[in-house]
Structures are given as C-alpha cells and as structure tokens.
Length: 99
Image (cartoon, rainbow, N blue to C red; front, side, top):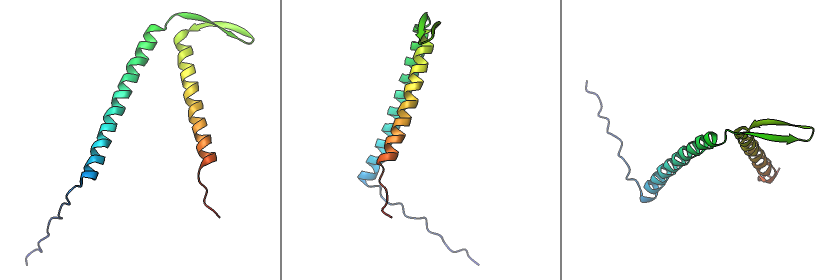
C-alpha cells in the first residue's frame, strides 16, 4: 500500500506592501531599542552627576536629601500621573455602542 503524496503548500509571493510593512516594523523595533539604550545611558549619567545633598523645604519642616532622589521621585510621579491622565481621557472619550 503506498502513501498518498502530499504536496507542499504553494508559497504565496509577498507583495510590496506586505514586505514594506514587515521591514518598517523591524525598523521601529530597532528605533525603540536605540531609544531604550540612550535612556539607560542618560539615566546612569544623571545618577552619577547628581549625588550632592540639598535642603528640601516642606510646608511643615525641612530635610536634607540627595538631589538624585528628588529627580527620580519627580520623574516617577510625572510618569504615573501621565498614565492615569491618558487612561481617564481615553475612558471618557471612547466610542460607546448604541444600546
């Protein structure tokens, strides 16, 4: 008894549009990687250059802290507030299906 021959599926020719999309996606990934590496380098330089102590005045007192901690806390706070703001705007302006 012989096995039935199975034909290999024919490969479709990739269109110019599909190839362009694939290559542009790859370029975007390389660009994102470059931005991430540059961000890490800038962060390391920022930490290395801002190690001195500064006086921080609060409403009810003051304290001494390193400048880099102020920069990091401010950056994280701004990042979180940006995410929350974007979420709220997207939630309030999204398209709702008619019922």
